Image 1 (cartoon, helix red, strand yellow):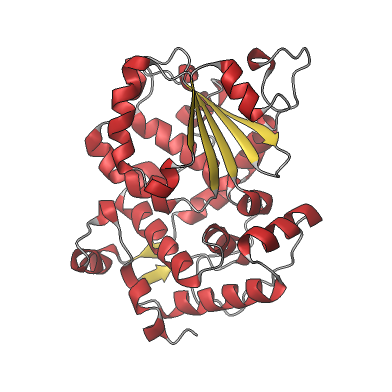
Image 2 (tube, rainbow, N blue to C red):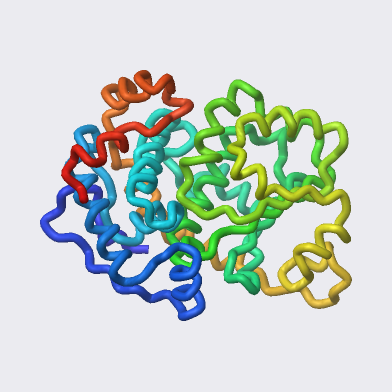
Length: 326
């Protein structure tokens, strides 16, 4: 994908957005997000002004589709969208080993793709994109938590650029069949304190449901501990299914691979389509690393709210009105 935008926060000319969403998604955007042509344009313009006047943001993408990732996730609440953008920029720099230098051609990323950890099953009847993660395909003897976070984040970065995904959101299925204790002990509590803000607030994508299938009993206590770092709102979107039949009765058979159903014909998944898109988005992923917020100065805002970089709070959003944005 050829990158046609930059990270100059005050460019001479902003790109002009043209909505290309299918009618189904335009209606979803109006019904669920209160989005229409006027609200969308006004929100994008105001967010651009806010970025331009932000004292600590040095470089940031201002193209419409990028900003809509945050606006749609926050249902066009401009203060909340700006707060999420601050967290996104700050956490990317605070934890570069997780979120920067993502390269779909890097050896580990290629290997994880080939080992089929991450499957894009397709769009369901509600327009949501359905993702399947097979825990057993993640080789704990070869990879660590950093590899997993980088791989998943790389995929979700590109997925969240898809406007249909921005509007309708994601349904995530995590199949824990044959997962070992080593899979669960990857998530050390010390790391979860840092990952928590990422799960709850960083990634600008609408996570509608999370289905966990066949969670081993021995891992239940670990999951309970990890849940301490998940927001109450997100907790309500978790569904635990003890058996395949229970999961299928809820999720349906249309998109699930035949190993989960009694169907004879394998559904046509979109994994290869999105894998190709990710490879084509290498320049876009690299450009993200050029965005910058002054973390040293911004951390003083965190300290005033009692938050450290691993638990980022509202930041400069409290100064939203002071920046002369109506």
